[in-house]
Image 1 (tube, rainbow, N blue to C red):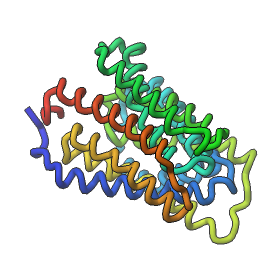
Image 2: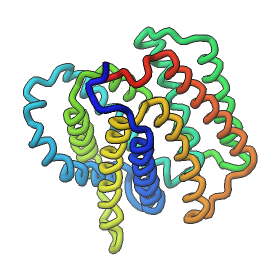
Image 3: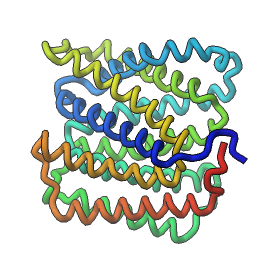
Image 4: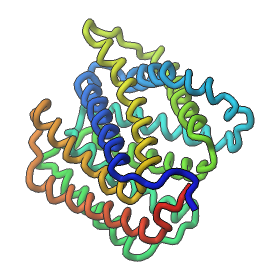
Length: 293
């Protein structure tokens, strides 16, 4: 039985498209300015703006913080999230947006492998095959003839691994209130990045302050849109729709940064997206649809 209103995929899809749009604009600003500032400084500013936006909601829901269970797991999740976001902000200025997004699509598959190892979830042979196809797709998409090897690509490896670990921790915290998860995440980013920011602070250039603030505004609002999307829409539908982010990334990369992915990228990205869609829809088929609370 559902405890909420009936699923509305049209409304949920609209919220998700807003989430994708806000995220791509936040990432675009990071790509534009990220090479001028340490990644930890951008993470800190993003978190600081997010805290300003979220604290009124946290105060309104302060009763949810009276008895926080699994505190150690919350801290582990925050630690992996800090690593993920810092590596992401380091990588974005150094790799094409389309490659950044395509490599990011391997996270559900890496999460699947980690869930099998750490949570002892049973993974069928076909889903292992999908993981292999996605890995092959990445090798094709990240073609040295099109995308030169860089520390940005190495950072993307960290993004995928630490981001998948953060998802595993989140799945273990499924009973935690959303506002608790959001505040721990945002406050944890600010606290963990603050010492590194103090040591490596780079003066903000004229004209850069507003765009840097907008990163936090866009990212925090996108998180709200994501939550509203999953409140209204079915998870399986939204998971497939989320792959439109690759279209957004290719378009923004082409129009604003002059990035032109070649045919090998298209082939590799197709394999990654196809494998991820297949895993997502198979997972949806194995669970009750629209019955989750």
